[in-house]
Picture 1 (cartoon, helix red, strand yellow):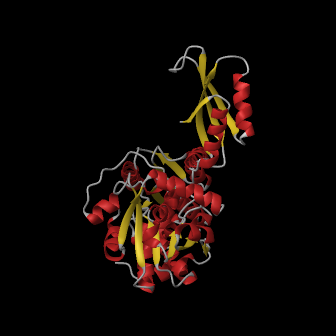
Picture 2 (tube, helix red, strand yellow):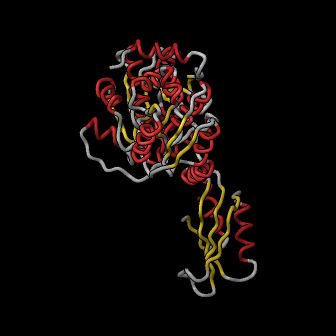
Picture 3 (cartoon, rainbow, N blue to C red):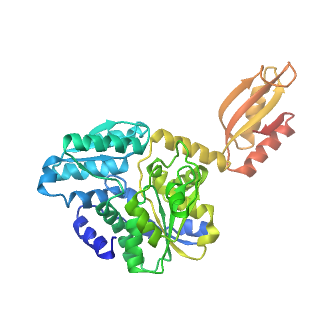
Length: 399
């Protein structure tokens, strides 16, 4: 099993090859959660993910024969980019097998590093099976995204850096997919500070390591906003380390992760993908567990599809009451819509969309139902707009 010395050896190999990313306190998140929150900005790596730590450590240890053959990996994106980038740096051939659902931004970014991308299967397990077949056929070295001690040791250097930056951390909260990141970080953290609390985070839709370690049988979903940790089969190497060194694994749902992404964008002005926001999601879901403690979170990656990000921001505005849908009933006569929009404007609301509904409504035939999508300042402002519309003689309610 890996030891602290292996993490230190990996750190020496990575010196000058990957970024030593900032680990700093977020005063605003600390105020909001009641914990002292420190963020490790792994989304600032060149490939925008911690994954290149493990990839670089693995490739740096290949023999000359292995280097001449080239490498192959399977990944939903971040491991792919890490392998492709460092293979390009080292002059190695790289073939990457990615599931068909992989966001386009990750596919194109991987290709930009000179890798040969093969899209195959709908899950990571299907992609892995195809990658193993190609590895045998073409005599390529298979670089597993998490079930490899060299990969785990490389990821563990993030934990080493966090405790060097903030030695008195009480707790590390780390996302779990296959388990490579938390396993490596746990070896580093427990080696440096045995009493530190290691908490893993998985999404409710893919609780594979949670099920394996806790002996549960929670069902797996089909998809998640945190596709980077949507792993059907947890790694054997990471699992053994997790069972020994990780104190607990908690689950978060899609709404928790979406909220965390929006908060990091608004508060920290940093872009984080779903898997990278899982740690903050756990903190937001159960702040009482971490209150008064020094907590380290890893912002594991920032590779998120722009269209998905746009949808998340819009949904976040709805949850915050800054975007609302209002239904207004009025007489279907000239001037009604003008009066409604004027009333909304006087109340300080901004109209994004207007939809008329005449057929699919229970109102009298001479009436019309108008649906408005409004920008507001929050729930109290929404209520003020509704009251203004009612005072003006309209039926109005929030949908």
